Length: 492
Ligand code: 5AD
Ligand code: SF4
Image 1 (tube, helix red, strand yellow):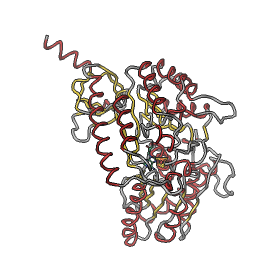
Image 2 (tube, helix red, strand yellow):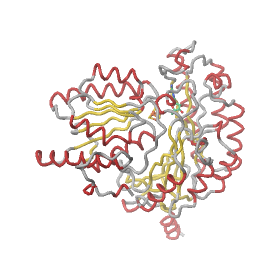
Image 3 (cartoon, helix red, strand yellow):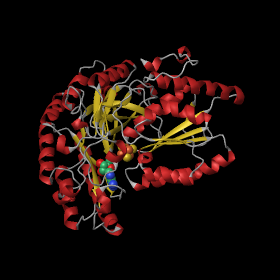
Image 4 (spheres, helix red, strand yellow):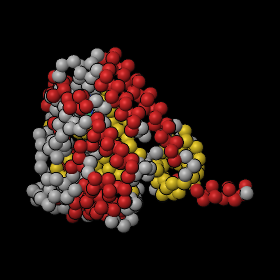
């Protein structure tokens, strides 16, 4: 594994290798020498922090960036006053962009006091040309800007930035390249994201992702399976397979493979206990996938299936390529095959032209499907997308009022559906000691519901059977089934 490569063995006297990932390991060693010098001069290693501001894909990219910084010898922190600060940005909604500019304002004052501090920006927002222009003009103190397609080149770009007093900018419009085997610093030792594909070909009319993440590219199944096997060897029990549209996985591979086939292959990996995936597009969800999920011991009982709108008219304008009725039929089929399946969704309120009748259709779908939970978003106009220039943008007060109604319905139904497993004993993967109450640990059911239970740090990373005693809205208070048994015996 390249993760365990010995950087000391890299010949730095020669020019950098052309092939990847060897080239990046060469630059990691180069940066490491700089870090050693810093340490000798300052009596401490340089500190670095990476902030992820977006989706799970973004969070997983940040683990890779942290992995590279850790390999180089930076001390990883979560502190915005570190020597090296990197923002991994999101641009799916405008407020994500505004947040970045806010942070940059703060960093500018820090950097005035400590000019050696280095600031870098990467991620989806950097794929927008007007953003990079603005940074060049107004935020001259930024040292490094790169995008989503060349993230694997981070070590090389950092090496350049360490030597330069000018802003280094490297953004690619698109790529067909996938570089394997770079280091990653996993947030959790027992669970990990795994990219299975990059990009998106769907072009929903509101969404900027296809413009910033490029065309769909799938990783080869053997590379994905090898990564999962290595993760399992390293203690991982749960993987989250990541892609913008996992249901179209493998279509463009030399030897096409379906997502359902990939799941079947992953299921064979010994020691792997749970498989999750995100995100599914309703138009591509196959019967084969439903079958594999239904028959699997490892694929979790949770499906995130973005609805976006319940109105067929709006769905058409959104270019979603399914109707309200098709969505309802699909969820009925899913529930029939897997009655214990948890269904979650994304909904956008206030898409251009949305009328009260359209909105009522959305509420109707929410009532009929009874989602376990839903992420609800106010429509955000993204420059460059077809929806941004559509007429009939809905006034803000109307959108806010609809948003409030949707949120309360979603919450009311979510609380009711959460009650479904009350009194059952189900496996929980314990994820952490509870932050508010250290006598508790917190974990998740296969259906993704959170459970808090009495226990210590020794349970973290373990899958334990938990009696679900009390549902409190969107989470459970439980106790380990064995002790429940004991308690019962005592009382009888
Ligand atoms: N405005 C509001 N929400 C959006 N999403 C994507 N683009 C926009 C936008 N322009 C939401 C969708 C998607 C989720 C990741 O973000 O619901 O499923
Ligand atoms: Fe994730 Fe999309 Fe945001 Fe990029 S723009 S971080 S892909 S949600």
